[in-house]
Length: 220
Image 1 (cartoon, rainbow, N blue to C red):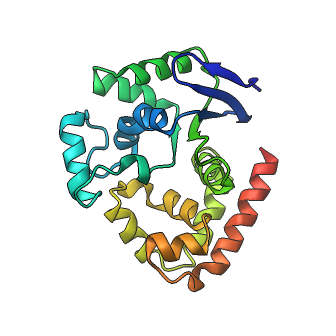
Image 2: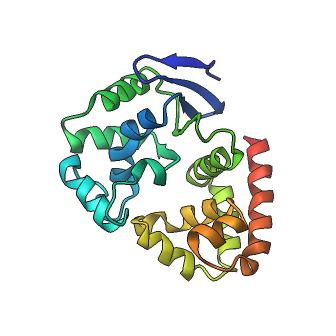
């Protein structure tokens, strides 16, 4: 397990909160966004997955298609999650990196035992849901038994309304199952206010997923 320590130039601290899982905690939400924005789009965006991303074209696209005419990225995104292998793929495809991206990759190169990375800022860390959401992504990606158990729960619900919302939010289709389970873990209020669906039909599934997350997190 890694001790908690600072990352030079990113105004962030890093710690291994579960074996194989690095958590980066940023002092500044703005710095969190500037570090991971292009990486997030490269990793799981329907529009930009596996593509080089130029902010001069990305920002207008996002404003038009997601932000209702405004560039709302910093308000829309509170946390991020990535398999470690994504970063090398990003570096290879992207070419020119920004300062924060270079500093992050340099840090990861010196800490090569991690399997997965999640990142939050202190602005949102008082709400435990954000860390829970990102840990759920880690378990889904790295623990086949957890992933099978989660999919069994999801097969019992009507996934279509959530999948449609994920599509509107520019998630790539390969992320739908994982994101559905993580957003269900955010609870009934999130489903009603953000996804725009009635939460009642999903309450049993939410309860089962919370129990699974707790069980497998304790095993990790």
